[in-house]
Image (cartoon, rainbow, N blue to C red; front, side, top):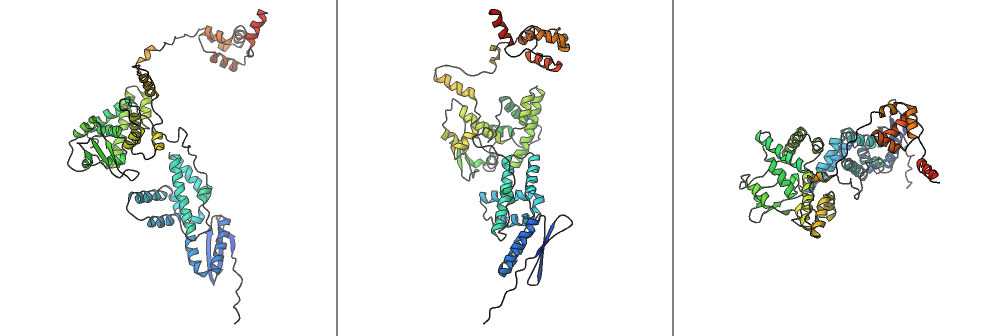
Length: 455
């Protein structure tokens, strides 16, 4: 039997459209397939992939379907694949939905039409709204895995343009700025407590937020852990509370101070029910309290503390609480005991939190080890030598505006001596010389002159 002879494989062609796009056309088994692309390379790659469909008719429908996937369709298909109701699955779905929320322009484009410059424009937009580099790179990572999913499910020649784009530089783990947390000053803490009590008295919040701030500092609990805390989780006899389903998926028992326990008792505990409220309610109360506390500091003339307080997050209370556990000399807790309170599994993350410790506390430990009863007291500034107020010599006004007088002065004595006579700094003399174009003695001129006199 004579074998049927195959015809030539159709190659198709690429034509340029008037709107700057490229159209690829190919005829397969009497049916015309047409696609429009934003660059010529993608159009030519489409023709190559369709030629595979000529040799494998069983793959033709799959190739055509996968090439038409938009980023939104790929994300939705990935969301359907994430099964389960556990916390990790919910977090994965929530993180993947951020692609649709933060990149709506890219979501409507086909995967083949997304270019490197589109990814880089997305990075610039997220940077302009103030997102952190790690957050932006996390978004790019989820877009990159979407490209990998599309390539695995049929479009095998798809370029992962997310990897070709320029990602945000992130500090290395050893750099001081790799984990940026802020310490809470004692005056800022007092202002926060005062602001929380004012808001509570004015009924602008339903939370006992001053107690919540103290509990966050004493227990180093996260906002989500505080929101899920139930009255039944507090063991009044053992002075502990149970943190259920923490960030790492495990639970832990946190010991309580006596003052913290008495503070909770004053909140009129119920037999059951949540102690606080939802995380969103806590966040709104925190923003109101922080704004009012900044106004209190501003009215007291503490402008710098007020400005810094506006950038402190609720999570920084956890950072401050961990630092205080390290610095409290009376407690003497080990790193393992502190990690049991904070819930850190690895010591490396705990060290990141404890990086910005108060060094005066360490010096106090040295003093105690040597039998000295010393502690740093900021109010002891009167021991510092008082700066002598120097009044400017009125004659300096004549020198700084006259080129001849200034040149004669700087060549008659060293600039430092002349500045001291005028009651100004030597920097002011150098600036005046530069402004007037006055030639100054070269370096070492006065030393060489003394040597010549001595000889």
